[in-house]
Image (cartoon, rainbow, N blue to C red; front, side):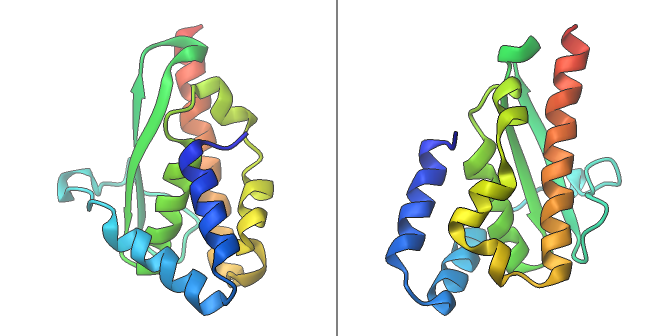
Length: 144
């Protein structure tokens, strides 16, 4: 259950045979992402458990399980910015209920990221996914 934007990334990754090319593509995606304003780089948006500095700012439109989820994010590391861009493609535009149903590990495995990220980056990715899931769950709780 991946978004169209994520499916496009998966197709691009299938086309890129070499991992170096895939890595460059992830970094390019991070460079293309708009930076998060300094005012939002605060402890409340910081993701714990990442080796790099990572911030995720939720943007939820509506109320209840059908509220549409999106977020903006940033990092001080280019590869992590790229991972944030991939997560944005995976989750943005889904309802908060759909966000909670996404198997992020399986979707990221389709890209081969699970095999090519360092242990620290993998832990950081898990922390970002957990943060996104908590934000979506929080949106559900405030509705009920």
